Image 1: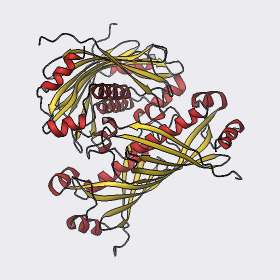
Image 2: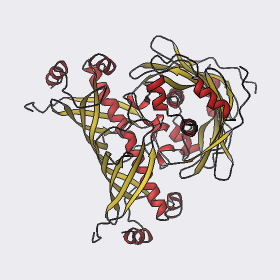
Image 3: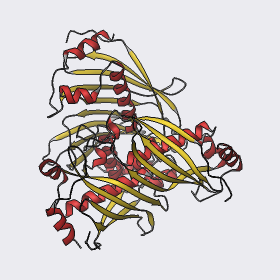
Image 4: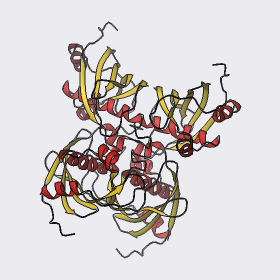
Length: 141
Length: 141
Length: 141
Length: 141
């Protein structure tokens, strides 16, 4: 896999609503994974990729295969958070992301290493990332 | 529309987990609608209907078209609740449910009138409830 | 109860992410209630009210007591929706909202009448809306 | 930390409802973390611990600090899954769990290593697990 590690960084703001919190008064941990997926979706959109069309026209869907998440400090209702995406490695069939969620002061709420694989939309089996996407991902750094 | 109002009642237990609560220490209101849908799903299962097969083999999906929900008192983390379903009216294209959620003492947490319509799985357009389902729903009272 | 019906309208954009959809390919119905609450929260914020401070300093929390929701047509992954809030009635202990969710073409996805009550943060019992809030709500129309 | 690695195993059934799935037709990945927390909650309950009382009477809350999750194959609407908990390591301030989610045929859907820390309920700062809990956890193997 001769691809250089990509350096680009992408930021996406997230507001904490009541729906995101739990009775301990903090964001329910699994919801950080939702925030991270919103940011990956928005990064794809920024690069020009419409996931609905990718699925309908090319049978391409991206699914997460690995998440390694460290929860550092809790975020609370009403906080303004920022998800920071960095694509760390591009493979023929998957994308490796480092993602962090920071609070309004730049303090780290949590960070994760997330691997997202390309699969076919019918059977959800691994398939190569389409060439036109690879070119954009490679040019993105 | 000549069908009698159905009298049957079905109960389904629900436990409140952290994921269901919010920072006010109570069940997040929209989650009661989730509990109610779990109970409708289990009621269909009890009557012998597998929704995955209904969609795949007959193109039949049920979607909610109206919810009128009264929230009476809050439920909290760890409570054991019971969802009580009653099918109040059977139409050719929809089912009307009265649903209540009670706490372990039988006190009402919330109640709702929910209308669920039969649609085709492709375009989600209204369609008649299949005859074999109608017969079961009618016999159910 | 002598307050005039308020006329103001507030709009809040919402993007549909994977987390919001279900296996029928559409937004899971209970999630529209989440979108509506985000819009009420943002409307309070716009009027200068910080709910965290209201709870901590004044013991004031708002909880929903009634939702009457009509689901008109399904929204799908990636759609850009707009929640439109209108405060229809101001009472001493509650706020009545008409809320609609529209798609990017202005077509109605769903609409609801939602009643939100003021309660004390400790016991969640009904209490009067603080005077300083009433003045803002009344001036808002 | 001289504690033996615990060997006990605990199983908890989970049904996949519409609320758990997404537009790709499969369980939304973050929801597996919810299933795992339900199983940890039920394991604590089986051991005699009521988390509401632990928080109210002893100021003890458990929060997740690390999740390392491998998603193996997707689960779909209506599947019956089983969460299998094994407490792998007991520390003075945290619990290490290996958790797996299997489908009805025993095939692995996903597995995770989850670390849960004991914190005080006020400030959510690390604190020792109470002695009476340690004794039960140690006796549990």
